[in-house]
Image (tube, rainbow, N blue to C red; front, side, top):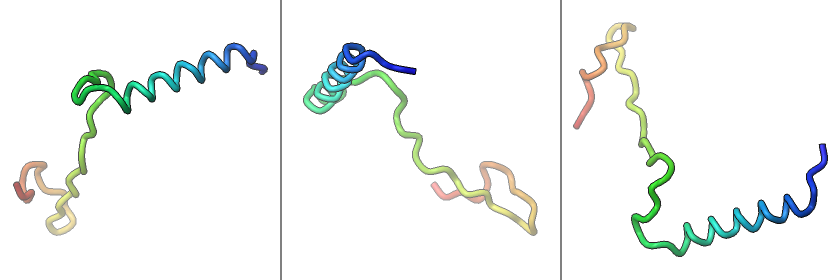
Length: 59
């Protein structure tokens, strides 16, 4: 599988341009992608049995 040089160069130019916009753009201007989900809750066990999903978690 060979990739032509011009195709590879245009992909690099596109990626470089997108990275530059991401670094220099206005705050909050990026609306694509998904925000980070954050840490997952650890499962709480009671006598080796998983507890209900909403019980035992601090707020």
